[in-house]
Length: 499
Image (tube, rainbow, N blue to C red):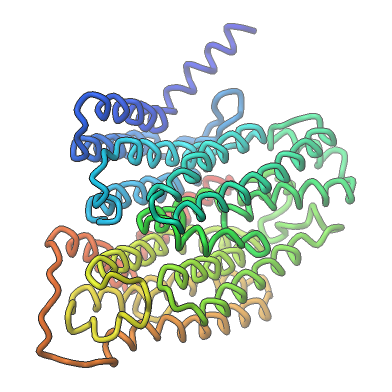
């Protein structure tokens, strides 16, 4: 027995190198900060470690196995989301070097980079977790770092307020989720998702019990993806956090949340003998698809409607992020191959356009001294390059051609229509139209208000503008040529589902 455990541990560690690399980098940043007190060295170690983790992740390509006594799954699906998390981490680390709100305090930032890496480790584990306890521990590992990071600029009142609200709401959602997990364990006698699936296939469902425990567990995931009615923390936390962390939460944290939500629903509640087109057949006595559809509609509608009234750009993008979670949930509703492929495609493109928008907001906030939409008036003629890139990102977030955002929404709506959810697709399209209004407000202010052509141009560093262009050019390019991303997403989903 012991030899079996040891052999499993040794074989598992061989495929756990990306996570171990991030953990080693985490420790090295702590040591480097204690000895050298050099922010440049800290960020260099953090980026290098993330790149090495990416190399090990690439070397694991095509691997399909479970590790550590089936607590983690190593497969192309989790790998896809780990790449999104890793790219987000590297972008945030680079973005942080241009953040005046982080550096103006003249303090050593070793703990900042350490916490970003700690959050990345938690998200990596969450993306592949197949055990309820592992899901909970991964979620808490990620959350503990994010609680501190959201209040990192503690001398700013709204930052401390954001951190406190995040902790309170996060603790409540974690308590609800762990209680749901205990009910699930009581019904099935197992914490492993695959064993839970086998139990349900063999013994069927206690509808009331599975409804209560399932709702509680999904509530914990819904909190992380900012789905209504678990979204209340998002606007205040996004507005109060440093812009770098706001961007990180809006992309990487959401990606990890969707990865575990999809894995939990698809593996625990689906009969492997049932075809892909009947994804919810095992739960036919409980209309889970309509429950998720209702959450999707509320999430996209409330996110977009409330965003209409926002005057702060960060807060507006927070509600926009809520709305995008609603769009992504449409893919969860159908839970087909095409639905999951669409979610994966959308997330990759969302990374580009959302990070790009937040970087421009950060750079403008440093020059203007404000995050208010009204203060963007005429800024297009003071910073034409960044304003043009911001326009591209906002058009992409709306979902208009020829941008990557259009391709992402096209695949989502196509997957929904293929399953006959016409009314859901119509609501999604109407919400996209609503979003155009508040995105257009920023574009209007930049280019059509206080137009003066002889104003002195704002001075931005070449490196910061290059970072924006690195995100902006693919946002246009993938709107025209998107085949590589589609094929990558198709491969990751088909290997995950085994068909």
